[in-house]
Image (cartoon, rainbow, N blue to C red; front, side):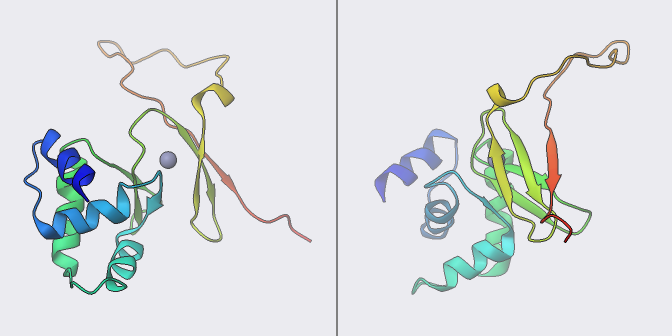
Length: 133
Ligand SMILES: [Zn+2]
């Protein structure tokens, strides 16, 4: 896919065949995927991409502003292909992340910032689970 190659190049990444494969899965649509989900999706395709390559490529995408890394807990993180500011629901049973549009959440009050700082970004995760019976 040419679009993906151009996207990589516009972010200063040389579009190798394997990077393009990873980008086609992760960056083609707004999505949240763990590295393992990405690997599983790539295994469906005929050309092999190694686990190390997937991890290296994900780091490259994050470093170059193509994806965001969101830590679910110390062991797990998901990669988010939506770079514009937004918030999330997280299903604590499945780990699934669902986007919340920034307009759908507002803050009445924020704490005073530590001196000598300004806000870089505000990310809210609302954790949800199936109702207890
Ligand atoms: Zn998201």
